[in-house]
Every structure is written in structure tokens, then in C-alpha cells.
Amino acid sequence: MNDVELAALLAGGAGAPYPGTWQRAPFAERAVDGVRYALVALDPGLGALGLRRDDGALWSLPENGIPALVNSSAEAFAACARHYREAAVRVDAYEPPADDQAEDQADDPAEAQNGALTKGPTGRPNNFPDSGPAILPVNHSAFGPASGASPPTDTGTGHGAEHKRDHTTEQEADDDDADEAGELAADALTDELLARFEEIDPAAVADENSFWSIAAEELGYALPA
Image 1: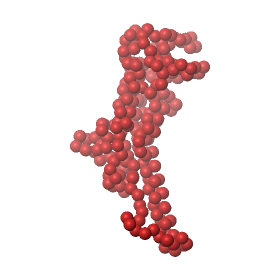
Image 2: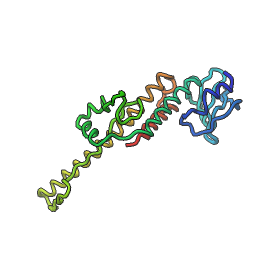
Image 3: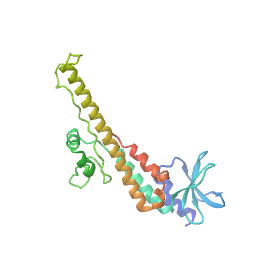
Image 4: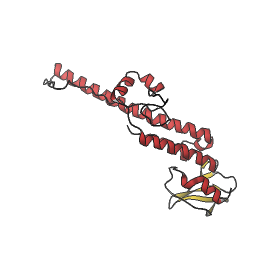
């Protein structure tokens, strides 16, 4: 594959989460430990992405650091970038479920974790605009006194104080449920992406600190609660 074909395949990063500037053919080269790399993307002062001229693998080349494998080939990188881009679009379009749906699923945490969302007629989750990882809803329900009810005035150890403590405990539990559901949703998205990356190129996610492992985890964190 020549540089023009390589540049067309990489397509300017194709939405990959790399902050540097993608280069045009013909590519400049850099030698690291006697290995020649075509510099396909540059992040001045921090590093570059380089394609090994000998075997076609794509590597991260940090400034004054040790090269780290990104993908075993340019084709694998393009495939991973495509899946990442599609997942990022779904994250941007994701809307938390309606309160009644969240409350129903909050009643059965095991069902929410295993089955996640109820699917619509297209087979896709109702609150997800495209196919993808099942995202658990966040429980937005709150507990408190009925509308118009007067708050208890007892500040001692009587019924009013007990009611206040119960209300606080229920609210804290509700907040904890929401936080846990958000974490499960982020984990589900990350795990789905990692599974796809592993199918494409196992070496790309063999290390939890690899380029695509970190990208999948950070995209999970970006899921709106």
C-alpha cells in the first residue's frame, strides 16, 4: 500500500479520538530504535501516530517515550474508528428514559441489568436512536411529602424527627440508585465497544492502557446521566 492509498484508508482519522493533525501523502518518516515509521498524524510536542514501514502496524510514538501499539494494521484502525464514531453518535443522541419507565425498571434491578431497556417495534431500545449497547436508565423519581402537605415541626426525637430522617434516607437511597445506574450504563457502553474492538484486532485492547481501551472508557464516561 502506497502513501496515497494509506491516506485514503485512514480518511483523516475518520472520527478517531486523536487530538493531533492528520497528515497528507506523502508522509514524512521517523526512525525509532532502527524502525521506520510513516507519520500519519502529528500532535506537536506530545507525539505522533506512525505506521511501521516493515509490517504496516500503527503505533503511538510519544515524544521521548516508548512506542505503543494502536492497531495491527491500518485496516483495523479504520474499522475501530468506524465503530467508535457510530457509538459517539449514539451517545450524543441518547436521552434518558421517561420517569415511569425508569421507576418500573428500578423496581427490579436484576432485570434492568440483564435486559436493560424495553425495545420498540424496530427491535431497538426505545430511548436509543440506533442499535448499540443496552443502556440502563437512571431513576429520576424522588420521595417526599405530598404536594401542599405541611412539613413536620418536631425537631426532637418524636414522629416529626423520624419522618425527616426517613425522608432523608429515602432521598439518599434514590440518589445512590441513580448514580449506580449511571455507572452501569457507562460500563455497558465501554464493554460493548471493547468487545467490538477485540473482534477486529485483539492486540489493540490487550492492554487496559492502550489507545482504544482508554477511548472506550472515556466515551462511557461521556454518556449523559
